[in-house]
Image 1 (spheres, rainbow, N blue to C red):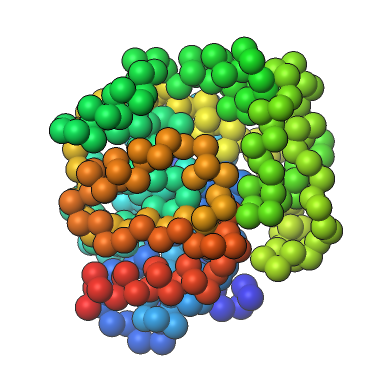
Image 2 (cartoon, rainbow, N blue to C red):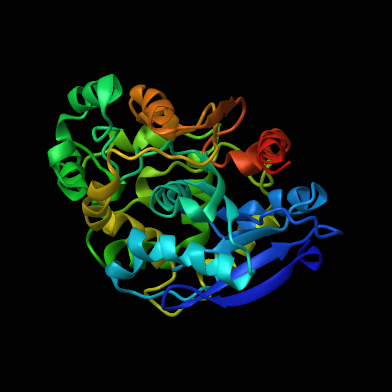
Length: 356
């Protein structure tokens, strides 16, 4: 598959980013589509979208986020705040000589593209969130900053809004294992995942899928040795319909290509930056997403199960031009891989209405 793509190393916000590009046969002047993965992800998480977007006439760019894959992997937490991740996307546009782009983000990537749309709407022709609705990431306020009934309802539902994310993680961990709290301490997760990367990634991909049971972690006490211990072995061996043995090995090899301690630093530090990002969102808590937007998720995504039902009302109230919410059956957290064809159709239909 790599033969279809070109690899680029470009300046991000103070570091080097790796990006993979698929181009259409003819340049038609449409803004590029920039694809932003979450945890655990890579540019490879968009392997089904890159060729489909190129065939539809779009220049598609999938980045390895800072801390992942072939991009630089700084160890300090501050490097992973939204100030830097938002600026990374502006740098991608500069590199590809584009004034604006269509931005698609999944998991932490969704928070990233929503933040870009709020802070630099001049750079955003369209924005698509996948898996995590606006403001329901680990650094959000759950819509409590919105005016009107949605904000009032959110304030009642999220009485924790005056607490930092790490304080909320710690409160949950008093009663059960909670991976976001486990990640806050530097060292244990780095060592655990690097020691057994294939087991960790396979179990986590399965747990987050439509067939998995991610939320079983709530049955474990807070003092279990590590995260892998609470992730069940998959019910069936690879290959799965959406992931082959070669796919998994690609993830393992890319994560483990970093120096010791940096193998999984991008995802871990994204959780550790939650408090700083929570402070940074104060400035935009009451703002609306003005570019045309779309939301796509798997109907069996455990994240959708975990978040408050108010999330979609908040998404609608916070979006000035929301063109649709699509929950795709038979998909979990990795909707772009688990149900790639349906995901691609929704995505391209939306982009065509925005760019025509």
